[in-house]
Length: 154
Image (cartoon, rainbow, N blue to C red):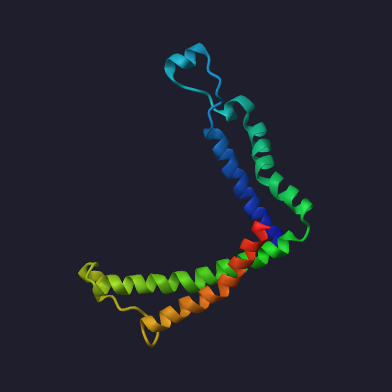
């Protein structure tokens, strides 16, 4: 699972860097391109294969250096990303979104079609239960954020 995840993320990151390299002008202009206000891209100067190698080095070099410098950092990063991402994605953001939608409907900020839509799976106690979800989720995340802050400050 880790290998396939790493492969997918690596390929997309290399493609991202290669697209970014295509957008970077080379900085060197000859007299004809000065007159036309056009500059060639770094990709056209390096060639497509060399720009792919450069993109791979930019995308994969820093993580490899970090992994060799701090061998145990992967599990720490995985734990932090799982907790912070999961609780935020499945706890805080949905509850705040529902509260925002309910408030906009109550204030009449939406059109009549949206006001007539029934929300499936309503929680009992309305906004109180949503505030409870946000509070519990924030309570789970806050100690981790404080811990990460202490790590970065020392």
